[in-house]
Image (cartoon, rainbow, N blue to C red; front, side, top):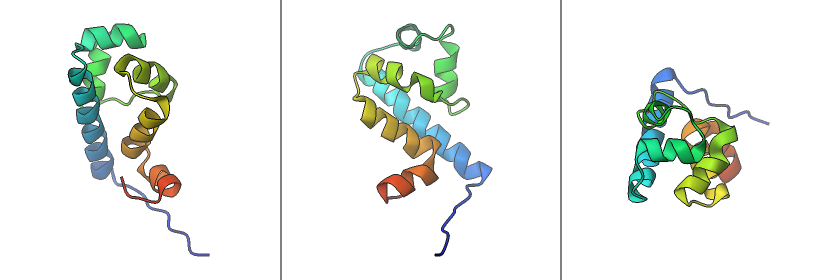
Length: 100
């Protein structure tokens, strides 16, 4: 059985993380939330963490996916799939058979 492991370079990982941040920012803005309001809803002490995530400099911890999805009004499974697409593209491809 041939193994099709793909390692992503830092550049590709950074690009995906930035693209994910853009998507999260769009979702937040579409709901009319400020970074501070979202941080309060999700339970972050500092709204600057939202800015880091949206700028691609941070990564949303998986244990916050549910609260983030709730704050944005997005179904949990859809949100988790979105996060896999940007944060775990190899896993995403294995699960869904498509490139992120």
